[in-house]
Structures are given as structure tokens and as C-alpha cells.
Image (tube, rainbow, N blue to C red; front, top):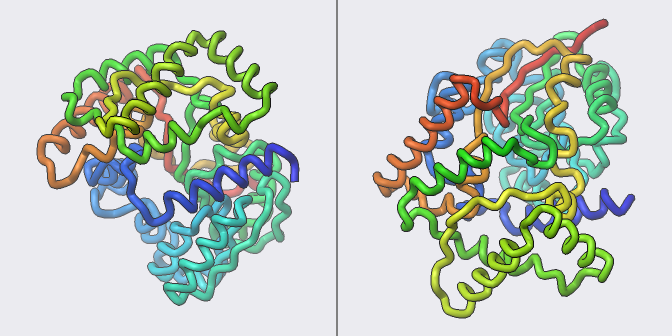
Length: 355
């Protein structure tokens, strides 16, 4: 296993162990029902119908259960378990690079008595799939971690049966989260619209910030990171963020999010070398191997980083927080509709091209 693969596997083993089965209010989709309802409406037209249910009904209704499905980058297995509960397949093969995540997936499947899912550890970039074997390939939030997109697309195309389909629910925005200056500006302006009480950083996010201590790193890494922060003009911001996090821990006072800190390329690579490695190329490369049957744009351009670390404040029982969330959603939706931004997330259904 290469050093990059090892870093990626370690990152996701640790992440899955920390977050599996918990809603910590760190991610934009954890900000309450308004987010999920919005995504569901954009895909299915029904706020209560998620993408997997919609896909099964629209494309496979008369064929269920499917003989064999495939899930790539399955993580802790939430998608496969959801599909199994809906009677989607007789058998499912699921692959991921993180052994710890797969163990959690196995344990959770066993707890539910789901015996028709098999989990395999593999580097998806090098995976060889059996030809003409699967009725559906599902990828949920994982394809933007695949660097060898051409190889993966070719393998999926030849592995699908003639009537098989590829289903993606995916980040397709800029590589390594290097967003345009205008997008970052608008996101920060939207943050300033929120009252202070809805900008409190979650305790979990503070703990994660403090965990990123450079003390355990080598000198070469530290010098490289220092140079990176100086080049990006972010060194003082980094020092201030770390100081504020320590102060919050020592005093017990809540930390407030006053600006959105967008990561540099090195920030992203240091955390996970596979993160958004070729995300902006996914759709164009996919079209070389597949015919896109359906594509729904899901947004996320403003919400993804704006709500990061503060999503916990948007409690579904708090009507004011949900009103504010709807305001943010409407702003993002309006800017997407008028062409100010291209959507950073998409739902895609595609059939293999037989060229």
C-alpha cells in the first residue's frame, strides 16, 4: 500500500469510527430536515422520497429484487443497508479502501440480519471487476476520491449488464475545493447574515481543530505547511484559529464562526490525498464511457462550507433556525438558477455506452 493510500485509509478509518451513527452537526447535510427535503425535492419532486427510493421505483420497479448490485467506496455501508431494507437486491458486493470502515459496515449489517451483502477491501483505482455481472452500480459521495477515473469508468461499463445502470450521488465541484473567489465571497457574506447564536462552532469541531496539532509531524512537513500558509496569506488566520480554539477549550466559552476558512490544496492533501482529486472532471470523463440518462443538480455551493462546524445550531425544533436555513437555501438556489454558479453536487443516472 502506497503512502497516499495508507494516509487515505487511515483518515477514513478514523473518520468512520468517530462519526458512524452519530449526527454531530458538522456537515451541511446535518443541518436539519430543510436540507434533506430540498435535496429530495430536487431529485424526486417529493421532500419525503430520497434518491435511492426514487431510483428504485423509476428505473427498477418491475425488476426488484435485482440479482446483483455493486457499491464502490461504501464506507460504513449505510447505502447498502438502506437498499437491502427496500428489497433492492438478492446480492450486493461492496468495496472500500478503509478496513476499519468495512468492519463497522459488516457489524451493522450483521446486527440487522442482512446476509446478502459482502464487503471487500480494495483500492478502487486498481479494481478489476467481473464482466457483465451487475444490474446496478451505486456510488454515494465516493467517486470524487477516485483518481483513476478512466479505469474505474471502464471497469464499471464492462461490469454492468446490458440493461444495467450507474447511479451517482456525488460532489462534482472544483478539484481540492479550490472554489472561485466570487463563490467564497458570497458564502462569507451569507454567513454574516446569521445572528451570532447560530454561528456557534460545535464542541466536536473545536476538538478536531485542536487535534490537528503539528507537534507529532516531522520538521519537513512543518516547514512545508508554514510555507504553504505564508504563500496563501493564511498564516495569521491559522494562528488566530488555533489560539481561539485553545481559549475555548480552557475557558469553556463557545467559539464563534466569523469567517469561512477555505482549505488550500495542501490542506486538503494533508488530510486525505484522495479528497476531490479530480472531482471537476467526473462528468466529462463519465460521458466518454456512459450515456447520461438523468442528471439533477443539487447545489451545495454556499451551504457546504458555510454550515460546516455550525450545522448543529439548526435544530429542527427551532423555527427561527429553520427559517434562516430556508433563507440560505433560497439564496443559493437563486444564484444557481441565474447561472452565477455551477452546481457542486449532482445526482446522475447513466447507462453504459456500447461504442
